[in-house]
Image (cartoon, rainbow, N blue to C red):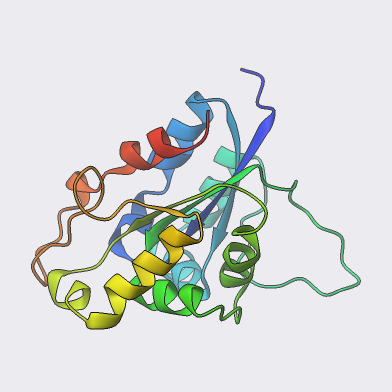
Length: 180
């Protein structure tokens, strides 16, 4: 299949990050050239906890997996995105993103991305985290800025603490929400 559109999948350190091949393959079937960017914590999870996972994801995408800013003198190794999928989106990254913090490559890309490309975000956190009053304000703020945040009916439904079900994470809903 000819992949002419580039999708950045930006993943945070939440349990669904251990199954990133699922959305990558689904996006590729939908015609996307997929590039993977990890938060530093997600990179640590995959590099230290799962032998060879980073290399397998690089082989799957055909691109290096990025997790930190490059030096100004270094060339970009990824093509520019046509859309971004932030999944899994943690509460921590949600809060930083909604307040324009750009202290990691992942946050820098999605903070700038609001003004540049369509963005779909698929959260992953528990009911106790979701109950914090700032969470809904952050979600509302990002939605007002044009981000498709898939939280609630038709997207991610927060689970009871320590009761997340990886098989129930709605990856396909996120892929379906991307621009066609």
